[in-house]
Amino acid sequence: QGSARLAGSYGSATQAQVRLDRMNLSVLSAFMPNLGISGQATGSLDYAQASGASFPTADARLTISNFQRTGLAAVSEPVDVVFAGRLLADGGEGRALVRRGQTVVGRMLANLRPLPPGAGSWTERLMSAPLSGGIRYNGPSAVLFSFAALPEQQLTGPIAIAADFSGRVSAPRLNGLIRADNLTYDNETYGTRLSQMQLQARFSNDRLEITRLQARAGDGTVQAQGTVGLAADSGYPVDIRAQLNDARLANSDALAATTSGTIHLTHGRDGGLIQGDLTVPNARYQIIRQGQAEVPELTGIRRRSELRPGRPTDRPAAAPVGLFKLDIRVRADNQLFVSGMGLESEWEMDLRVGGTNAAPTISGGLDLVRGTYSFAGKRFDVNRGIIRFRGGALTDPDINIQATTTTDGITAVINVTGTGQRPQIAFTSTPALPQDEVLSRLLFGTNPENLSATEAIQLASALNSLRGSGGGLNPLGKLRSATGFDRLRVLGGDDATGRGTSLAAGKYLTNDIYVEIVTDARGFTQTQLEIALTRTLSLLTATGSFGGSSGSLRYSRDY
Image 1 (cartoon, one colour):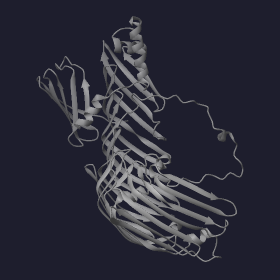
Image 2: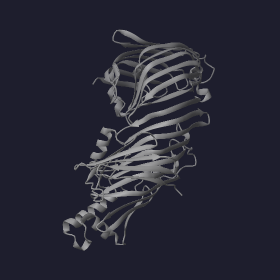
Image 3: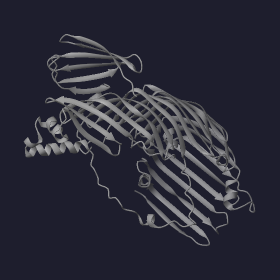
Image 4: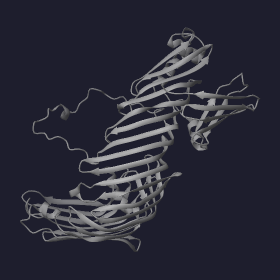
């Protein structure tokens, strides 16, 4: 694993010496998990400063062998990095080489000349020092991207950079070009992949101008243009516009979504702003609470530091770096699928996202298009679904969902109201029966007083699963993902049509045409077609193999 040695002293004079001997860079994962950097570092660093006000001197020599970054999606090509740098009161320089095998793929040279004594403190002299040099790189982009230290994110593919330095350390000026024709970006958290990425940009003094950025995102595309400021004096201004066209921005087990629309990101001295108008042609969300372990959390516990009263001299906390205000509208006319814990549903959405990226606020809501809910072997039709956000956190909306089923001569209704963090679940029925009797009839077809001890335990377990602590496998969800269907569900038998227990599979042919095929093991087949004529009017047709066809118009509107 190599070794590291440190020696030095601190006081009126400061000295420090660091020696690395084949130190494995994977130790960085202890400070930044999932970084995925590996390689062996050998070298030295010597630092000395006669007093706190004097100009320091430093000398660094570092060699990194087999520098590499590994992730779930890609593994970068190993390279060797050599760096040598020196800082003195009258000037400093740094040189670096990047080798892939025996081929040099990158070079860097930087020189600076600090201002003479009397021009301010040593830090002011250093930041105002004239800068010169340049960088030439033509190799794997993963090497440069690794310096961004972004866990669970990867950038692969060749990239070419040629730029010259000038200006000052606090306000550098660069002139040069960036070119790439086949980059791939992977985000392992959300399953995002941008492939066939083409990048054309140029350095123009104190800013980077992105003239072209284009990539494939699933079956869609992402395009962007804009500028990124490089000078601290001007607050690193940013102005980037992106156009999304059916871009698949998430593709994980829990979330999959495609998006179209525009995003405008700006940043200046007064902070940043992200504006957008997005539509979601297709999205799937898998409720992942099922089967998870529940860990109780103690309440009323506070740290000792939280009990200490604030002092008058305490300074207010600085605003977090990278804080952006949000002004984004997100819409989905349909095909927003939510499943899990027995729920199979489709929604439409109109949301506005405000606040900041650290504390977003949500307003607007979701409305049900269609849905079913399976509970204890019974199938409920979800006939009402309303979710509303009141400008607060995404996790605590108002909920109003109703599902019904008919069994044993009664119509049972499940009502879910309250908020996302405090849902209230209640049973009603027609004719009216007590809640425990409704559930007992659903599960066992009899009154609660007729239940055996085992059945009573099953009744309590069913009530507990409604509170979200139950769960289990979701084979239909896995099968739907594998086959590519938009909706997959099991239907009970229907004596009126001659249908036995059946499997129903549905898919959108276009954004307005939905087709579903129902079949059972006895040869029954029915094709159902829904055509959205307007946002409120739909045409529904059904044709079965045992004879009989039907057609109807459906009008629906939220009030």
